[in-house]
Image (cartoon, rainbow, N blue to C red):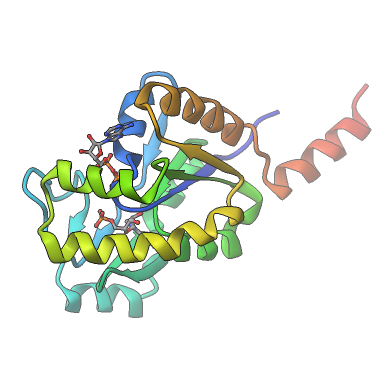
Length: 206
Ligand code: ADP
Ligand code: 5GP
């Protein structure tokens, strides 16, 4: 049965290990397209425009909102973050698995628009304390940013029940193995359109 692509949404507090896990699993999950978000936050040391994010001004982001260029967008930690529709559509039309690293608000918006092809996983360190240690060890954010991210994490964790899967990132190795299973399951998800086609072919088959 042929089908168009599928979406895998990953959410979890900043510092949960989402990028680490995707990187660790990338050789085992087959061809995928990682949706590069657009943001108004400043690039961290080591981050590249067009690789980690498209870094834009607030004005430019707001123009894109008006033009309807985003599949979803939200304000997180005082900055805009959004997923551009065009690149995602192209990847889905090619039948790819499209992976999003977006917050809980973004997950709700994607569910509202593309529920039938969406699978989701919430990734988190075992405890809030572990999250704090990792944010500090990452050495990319100053104190006020870390405090803000911890506060946000306390709210985000309450949305864990809205996701299909929870991945507790205690060791990267185990979390990456679980992520591979989730990504494989996400690929098997059929759109409602594909299901209708399948039923009609099945009924008419010899
Ligand atoms: P996110 O993409 O969710 O913001 P990162 O992948 O950047 O998170 O991880 C945050 C920090 O925690 C990084 O410094 C990373 O090396 C570290 N880290 C990730 N997973 C683990 C783990 N299982 N144990 C210890 N440190 C981890
Ligand atoms: P960070 O600043 O640590 O890269 O990301 C902060 C938060 O923004 C994370 O929870 C991340 O998942 C979320 N985020 C990144 N890109 C997007 C996006 O395009 N849309 C939404 N809604 N959230 C995003």
